[in-house]
Length: 167
Image (tube, rainbow, N blue to C red; front, side, top):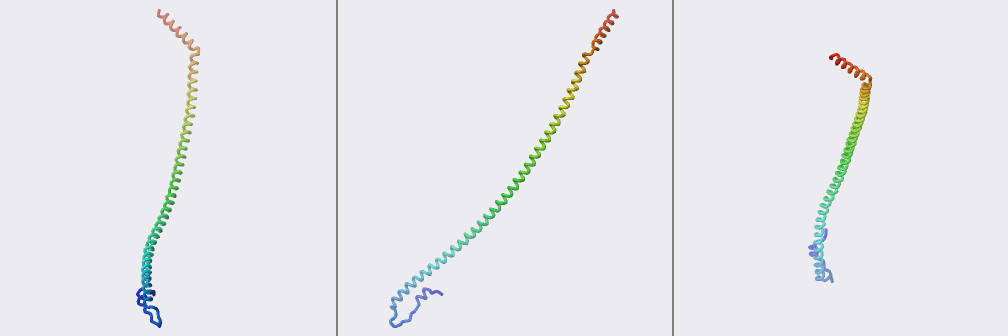
């Protein structure tokens, strides 16, 4: 157990023949007591300061741990968001590709239908042209036929007979 200033103060020395000067020893002991009290006070102050600093250190250590946990959670969340965004973008791309394929297939189908319609219209136009040509040729043939001449001759002859018979 360490000495206290009171222990130093109450210390009695035995006297011997030709011992130390009592006043000098008492002065020295008084000085030691003052220094010892100062040292004890400083030690107590330093211990209180160490306690306060340890409390602050504990507080900052807790803050550091909380921040580290927060950073880990933020990193995990960022990774989850990144993964989710990646999945969503892939889904959007697949959907866009499906839509593009559908649009292309629709366009090809319409193109084939239009092409078939055009071919059908060409066939119909050829048939119409052929029929029209045949009709026109038949009409020309009728016009060029000599029956017209006979018809005109008969009509004129018939009309002359009618006129002559009336007279």
